[in-house]
Structures are given as structure tokens and as C-alpha cells.
Length: 360
Image (cartoon, rainbow, N blue to C red; front, side, top):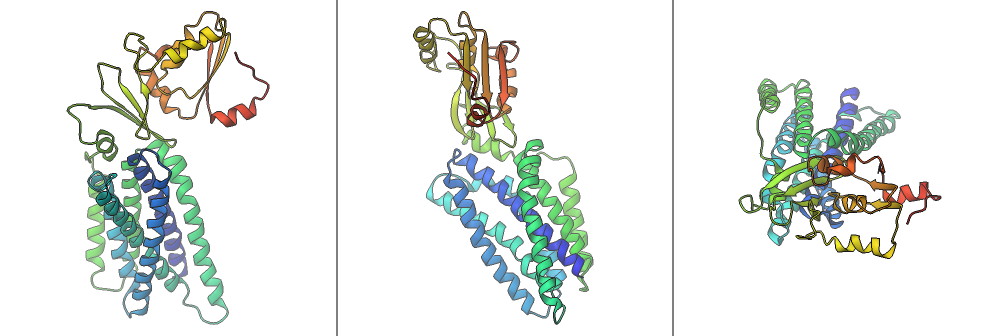
């Protein structure tokens, strides 16, 4: 059963680290992109891994069917993954009580999958004599591969194609599929019941359904009637959303932090555009302009109207803002102006790669 143990170790590493990436995205959004969000998730995950590994060690010492334990544990883990985006708006928040609930939820979800790590070692390291070390190293190697692929696949590809909620569903579905595979190796009489239960849950996930949007709830803060959420754009870089405000222009948020308004009117001046216009007074005839960070495009739209402007380099790290700007006629012209050259890149990195560029 070495091959099964190796696959189990690899997939547990992959699913655990994928789940951690998704938790970081959720908590970071709720905390407005604050750096300590990652520290919170990492700390809770390490505690969860330690607790789960000890529980797995307990099962390994008992004379029970470890395949059944793996199947049931994965079944519970898959259900937890699916429920996370549904329950997240109820447990996340910046109060002390919600902080404790968040820490408990992260620790628990990390701990469930960590039960499988000692079980995989126990199942794959049963050889005697000189082969013991080799078998252990193979299981470790499989877990390292999975743990490496988890952040890469989920962080760079899945989050760029699917929402956070959909990614949790994907991780949960794969976890349930692994539960079915584990149940297939069971010798217990309960094997059939486990397989049927897992299959029914997988079918329930795959059917069309409208699950609560965790990001929408966290972005709205329960104030939908007064300030409704208009749109949410998710990609691997971050999450952008807008809040309706007919008086000062729709408010833009990047990772749940204020990032300007969609408004170019000096009569309203909710973007404090006098700061942009003063640049024209300091330099009476700017022809080359560099903009780092487009956001909702209001400032770039102002620069576009300066007399004598010939060339604007616009560096924006998140392509989601281009999608946002294209939907608003007030700022959309910045995307079609041949004088404006848009670069999707990190501002500092782009400057280092273009040391000879000069601007007014």
C-alpha cells in the first residue's frame, strides 16, 4: 500500500496548503490587507497541524482500520471546506470575540487534515529493516511536493480563474474524492456507507446552487440597504469591489481598503483632484507623465486632459482595475487613448527595468 500512502501524503499536503492560501485571502480581505492577517493564519495553522498530528498518532497506536479513519477524516475535512465560505461572514470580524472564532476555525480546519499525515506515514512505512528509512523519506517527499504545489496551483492559477468561494468548493470536492479512494481500501463493514455518503455529498456540490457570497458579505459589512455592493472583481492579485454612492461617486476598495472614487468632477471633488491639477501649475507644459497605480482611473483621466501631453506610462499591478474602469464611462477613455501605455507590473520592478525613461 506504499503507493496509496504516498498519494495520500502528497494530496494532504496539496489540500492543506491550498486551504491555507484561501484562509489567508479571506482573513486578509476582512482585515483590509493588514500584514498581521497572514501571521494569524500561519500561527493557527501551525497549532492545528500539531494538534491534528497528535490525534493521528493516537489512531495509529490503536488496532483499528486506518483506511476507515482516513476516509472519515477526509469526509469531515471536505464538508468543512465547503462550509467555510458559508460560515465565514458569521465568524470573521475585527472584534475580540470574532478574532477568537476565526482563530478556532482556522486551527480546526488545519487540524482535521493534519490527522492524515501520521496515518500516511504509518501506512507507508511498514517495512522492516533497512527499508524503513527509505519508505519514510518517500512519504515525506510526497508531502513536500504536495505542499509546494498547493500554493502555486491555488495562488497563481485557481484564484485567477475562480472566486475564493469556488476555490473552497474545489478543494472540498477533491478532499471528498480522496475520501472515497480511502474508503475503497477499507475492510470495515462501514465501507459501503462511507462511500455512498461521500458520493452523495460530491453530487450535492457539483449540482448548480447559489451559495452565500462570503466576500460580498464581508465587503458589505451588513449595510446593503444604505451602501449596496455594486461589483466584485477577484483575481490572484487581490479583490476589488465598489460601493454605491450617488452623491460623491462610487467608492472603490482594494482588498477591502479605500482606494478612491469613480468621479472626476471638481464640483464634487471627492477625489481631491486639486492635487492633480497643481502638477500642471508646477510644470506648465508636461509632455511625458508616469502614473504608478491607476485604481479607478480618476487621476489618469485628469492627466489625459492636460494640454501638450504626448505620452503617459501607466503602471498598475492589478489587471482587475482595467476591468473596473472599462465599465464606467466617466473614466473608461483612459483605456482607449493611444497616448496612454498601460503596463501590468509592479511599480518598483518596472522602474528598475526602465532606468532610462524620463518624465516631466
